[in-house]
Length: 283
Image (tube, rainbow, N blue to C red; front, side, top):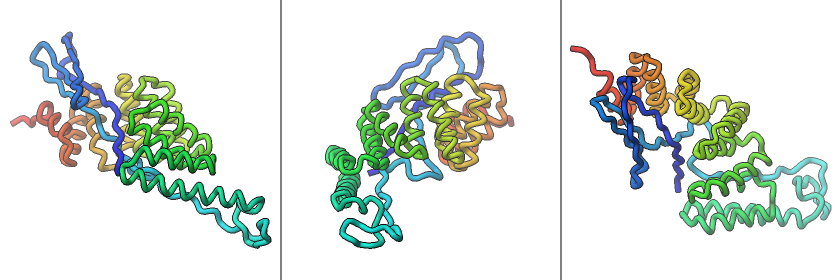
């Protein structure tokens, strides 16, 4: 079962900036934001845009592998076996708990792939009962609850994953996404900054943060971040569309049209629409 996460991109622009009455409404069936104006100005409306992940572990799937403890030379288990694994030398019960944790975790991944989310949740929680330091189980629970639209619960599990593994860039970025969706931009920026510290080449980070800057009308910062998103993921047509919008707002139409044209060639319909409306070549 694959997972697609969405965030709002609300860059809406008109060809003139003089006083116009703009009215927006949300279509419940498509979550599309539709904008109309009272005069002849043409406005492009954007629906929710897919977040893609380029060079990190897949952002659309759960983490399905646990790190296997390795034998350590010189360590002896309680039964006298040499070359024991860390976590097994103090007590055979500890080794049993780790095996049970792994079994439950593997069951959780199987249930998730079958689409049996309730059973997956139960299995991952069981895994945590036997091994409460399993950051991957926390991440997976965060992902599942996000899919179930239980964002606050999802955030709590992502934060637990980060508490155990401060370098978990996926849990960091999705914590930022949830704050972003709740309109808490300051907290979102904190998590984006932490993500940048541990994964400086993460295209998804710059796409999210650049889009958020665009919403705040901080177009120069938006262009800067979206350019990095494109650098690290040259196929990211959504980043091209959004950077084009930022260029448009800063009256750099030629650059905007270049981005929209590239997005259109990558199959992005919004890029094609923008080119048709604003970038028609003079005969």
